[in-house]
Length: 257
Image (cartoon, rainbow, N blue to C red; front, side, top):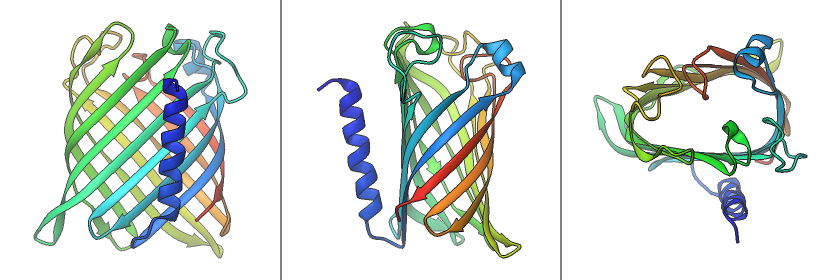
């Protein structure tokens, strides 16, 4: 079985496990999405708009939390090196383990793996890159607002001749704020990551050894089974370009659980 098929099989097994796992909470969904880069981003970094399918799930219990997603980008395309329009695969798994509490604030062991690969992506055949972070996190609540920060060491594996090794540090957070307006169930979310003290071999395409990456979104759940959303996606000194990049993502999800 080749790497892509193995990755797909593993992701589907994980999504199924998350969907049926017990705990204080669990969720799973599948979605169709369209990412529309700004004209300036397309002109500066030559990135192409694309659609993607996603399977996403998560669970939380007394021991901690587990979250993951698997994306198929350009699902209707092949692998003909079509200038950024080839099919690509992206997987992310995030784990938080509750170790102790200090003053009522949880101290968590934090780890995540982000893996993306696809023929022709980044100008290379059979390209892949994998980011691994291991560190500490916590979970803060202020009424309905939840903020989950983390900080850790960053290790990266890259296929375009840069190899594998330490790539500085990464810090960031996930923010969730569910609320109601006009009798509708809405939620504001954001994820953000800052890479610090990046190794020169991984930062050679950038003007800075600090990179920013994230998205802010508004979600609407008109029925239990359906969620729609719009996201503002942004990156600076990241995603292979030193230019500021931004996009709008349109999403519709079917909520399995």
